[in-house]
Image 1 (cartoon, rainbow, N blue to C red):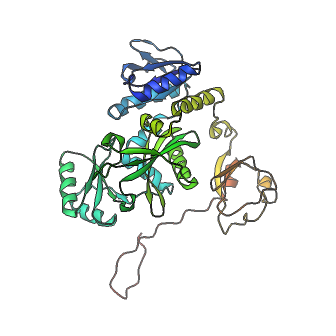
Image 2: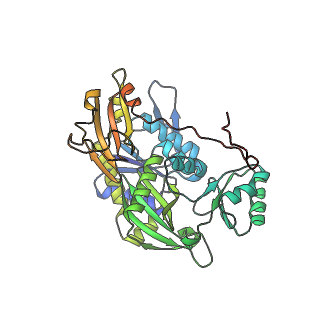
Image 3: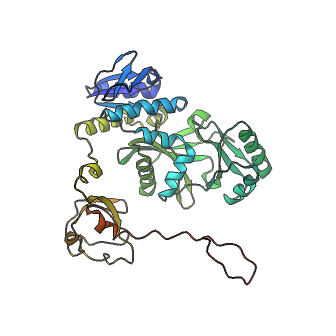
Length: 397
């Protein structure tokens, strides 16, 4: 495999470890400065120039895109994607993860548990926003901060208002987030590669510091996480479109609370804490995908007019509950179940005798009209006005 590591820091620990791991496995590997690329849009086929010369062919890239060059870096990654070069982290995935607001919006839409968060811009909306997330103390975050920079704990409402007003006056956008007291200055970093967590560590803040980042002086220790934490980490990375990611989670009273998904996780702290060859696992994953690439079934199987791929959820009151796939009527409606997702279990090509349960998610290929008729309609959100005592509520238009 010929691999390019996109990095502006060839001497950084993570870059060196990834390069060494690839070389040890017999792969041809080079570290390329992301800013030295030129995207050639004048040709019929997508091309890249590097240091003023046409780029040679690569099987895969591993982006290590810094926060300061997100826009240009993701443009380069996108060009590689258009050239059919494999990347574990797509341009969209990197962009989604880098913007804290966008990441929070995406994860919340997919029922990922997170601390209560709000985003406002008008000064008059700040105090109500603080109250909605549980009141002071609150955590204030810059949208594109990294390594704990731009994360502030405001102990009182007036202090929070002053900080947010100051940041807004410099055209900074911030998130207002509930402070999870029970985390006690600790969090868990899970390193996701592919569809599993290959290593995890607990980070503990130093002294009175509430940020547990290693760059802020936090200490680290290896930790065995529960399936609940592993599922939250893997799902978060997959939802963001990342095959290699560091997922930061707080240990809430009711389980994991996802704080952030990092598309370029550092390896030094977690390799030291766990003594695992994480760089090697990342290289092995990339080599496996190059040797046996994933197929986008949505594109490959929807060639026939009227056919495609869709997900059908088996709701608790559905007629499918308690029936086998063979007796479900799906085959008669020209619907083939490709994969059955049940909790954390994935059953590829399930048998006709498999009995369906409430909550099952079926990835199906078949007639789109037939599958649309089986998808439960999304209920309209009702907005109820506050009325005087005794008055009847009415739904807004």
